[in-house]
Length: 86
Image (tube, rainbow, N blue to C red; front, side, top):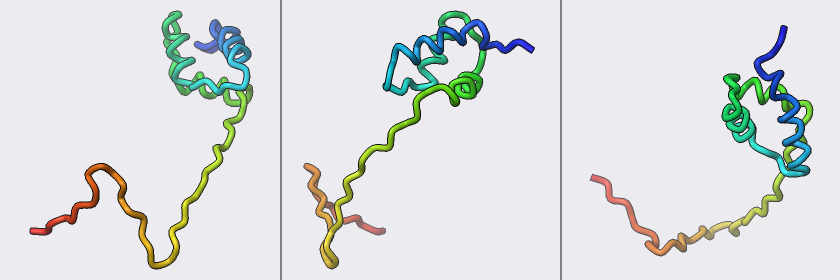
């Protein structure tokens, strides 16, 4: 059975190749084919791209640990304000 996505599969593959290592958002690609006349859902695009698009790279997270007995100070311009209970 033909898919609603069939006319756009080559376009999607070309966009992934053009993007290289950049991981394009499924919603962006869905919007691009919708502008070309597709009436398929975001989910159908997601299912098609899952096996062929590059995996997301995990971002390095640097943790900041506060020593015991010390708290992190609020350095925002408004500073810390105590809350009042009624």
